[in-house]
Length: 400
Image 1 (cartoon, rainbow, N blue to C red):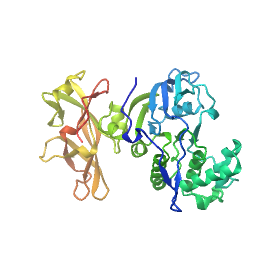
Image 2: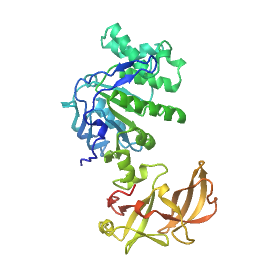
Image 3: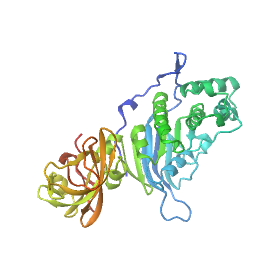
Image 4: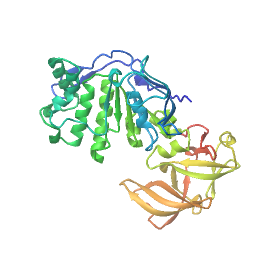
């Protein structure tokens, strides 16, 4: 099935922009692209020997020229396998992969005009930063002056000029990752492939480096496919996000699309932090039951349900303490996480005879305490409704 959400406006008619080098006040021209560098997965499938279920199952996905697309999903969902198929490191058992207009399904990795950045930096410990960045060019037979020029340009982009003569052991984790990025940049590929490049960094450095990578990609305008299991990285970095589960594409769209209109229960629970609250609820006249309250839902939305029950979803910021005692869903507070002006209430309730955990955003200066019993109600027009059997979305996007 082909999912489509439209490309971001900035990608239309994209041109190369000058890039500031961060030191001398001059501008470095970004290289002219050789050809169109879109990426297309056309029902691409990977089935490992001895397995009955494909690791990647008929993946249909298009990446625009210059787009930053993030593949995200839990461990084992097929995101890294998809990236390796694009790189030529995994066999494609069925379907095709295109870079631009060229079918690269059977093209050797070295001839695909791509550059890959891995979770481990894979730097040569006996080489300097400059030698590491220029090594692939040396192997390719690029002359010394051209190598030096490309390395210097990449070093300026990445703020690595002061470290060009250092060995990797003298660098921080973030600096080593930037060297790995520089090694990819100097090759001037059509496509960047990044396989969880921030996994080895601590939390603070992760935030800093993901901002640098996203900013750099926008300045270079090179088509980029980025793999991560971290949905926060996906939301903050990608022009669009493709969510996979068990080798199957669940949804692709902009971060706002996925947050406001998840296609199914899996995407709803995976995208967003803290995760969306999901409950089984009875359909009633004019809406759905939420504890003792009835939350209004459009009749057209509920008409598509396959049974008398639906799954409702509500994000933590859209569920609030009830204004009237006894109205809404009764919740016992387990913990309140204080974050300054805001906080998160973590509690549990009994829904359909089962314990159900719930998270709500509360005022960080005035909130219930652990052990308290409270009643919560959702904002009606921010309720997500899904079919209880199929898990598919019913109705449109919630209000902004």
